[in-house]
Each structure stands twice: as C-alpha cells, then as structure tokens.
Amino acid sequence: MALDEQGALGVELIVAIDLLEGRAVRLRQGRFEALRDFGDPRAYLVRALEAGARWFHIVDLTRARDPSDRRHEALLGELLALAREAGATVEVGGGVRSWSDVAALRELGADWVVVGTALLDGSLELREPERLVAALDYRYDEHGRAIVRSHAWERSTGLELEEACRSLLERGVGRQLLTDVGRDGMGVGPDVGGYGALTQVLPIELIASGGIASVASLAELTRLGTGAGRVIGAVVGTALLDGT
Image 1 (cartoon, rainbow, N blue to C red):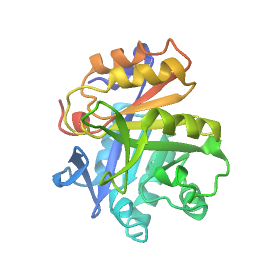
Image 2 (cartoon, rainbow, N blue to C red):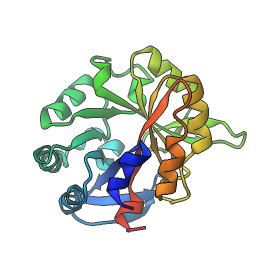
Image 3 (cartoon, rainbow, N blue to C red):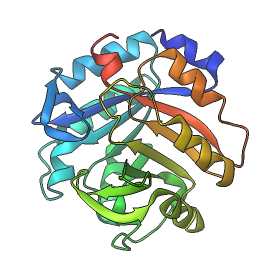
Image 4 (cartoon, helix red, strand yellow):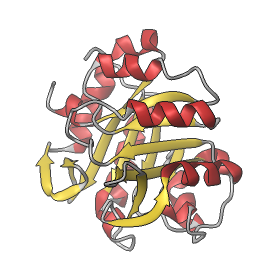
C-alpha cells in the first residue's frame, strides 16, 4: 500500500503502533492470547516516517489492562519525540482514566489523547474536548446490534454504539475512533455498513479502525462522506506491519 495514495482517496492513513512489554504488537480480535510480535516500535515508527506516514495512533496495551502500570512512559516519550521531529501528528491512548492522565500525555507531546469508556461512565472530568479522541470498541451481538466493549475489549457495557456516539457528541467530543473488534487484525475489510449508518445521522469526525487491509478499503470509506458526518481517517496496523 503506497502511503502517498491516501491524499487522492480523501481518507488519512493512520499508522497504528500497539505497545506491550516494550514491543510493537498486534492482537487478533482484541485477544491478548492471539498476539503477534513485530519488534522494536522505534524502528517501526522511523520506517513509517520514511515511507511518508504523518499520523500515528499509539496505544499502550499494558496500561490498557492495568492503568497503574506506567512502564512504557519513557518509550512513549521517545516515540513522540521522533514523530514531533518529523512533523507528524500523534494520538496516544491506553488506560487513560483521569484528567491528570490526559495532561501527562499532552506534556509528553501527544497532539491528541485517546480516551475510552471513561468518557461514558463519568469517571473522567471532561475538559478541552476538542483535544480528545473518543475511542469506542464494539462487537456485534447475536441480534446484530453493535455493543460497546470496555476493559481492553474483555467486557460488554450493554450500551449500543449509536447511543454512545450520540452521548459523546452532546458533550462536545466530535472526533470518535470506532473499532469493530471482530474485524481487528483480521484483514477482512472495515465495517463500512456500520460506519455509513452512523455518518448518515450523526455529525461526527469518524476514525475507522479494524480490518482495514487495502487501498480499496480506504476508497470505500471515502465514499461514506455524504451524510451528517464523515470519515476523516483510517487506522491501519497489521496490514502495514506484515506487508500485505
């Protein structure tokens, strides 16, 4: 996939880097037992910059499972410094539970801070919503409903995705990263139907995630920008790491 093709398609390609035990990894369908190790995240970020990447999505999976575990703080600082030096934009998330967590990541150099269900349950004081990306992970249930997941994808909130997105919009968080966990790391294509339904009715800046594996996928997402909202970016992880 040529990174310079994204401009013509109208959807920004966002390079995903997931951190676990100091390594760049990918999970399949959000399962930690289905993990692939891709080595040094610094080396990968540099390669992506050299290829033309200008937007990164970095998630601290260790902290996502245990918000008190800050072992990646120094590594995050290194990655952010490398990206800043090249003029790239970086959003960082994983285990963000308080405004002090947000402030600390901003101090490290994150342009945007990715916050999950802490935005929904009221545990995080909402300030500067324009600097936050709301990250909602979801799975379809047996009735075809998209249900939001929490705690590193391991628990169901019982909340339907559209309801959650609407609630966040009402609180001023318009940039929302939506991951279909069932597609994540599988290379089967994004949830075009689900994203299309949401952008028709909600004025969100949607970042697509999960299953994106080809330029054709990016083209499909571009065509969704005809409703109230639009798809502004697509997070790509496994497809870039394994070269497909």
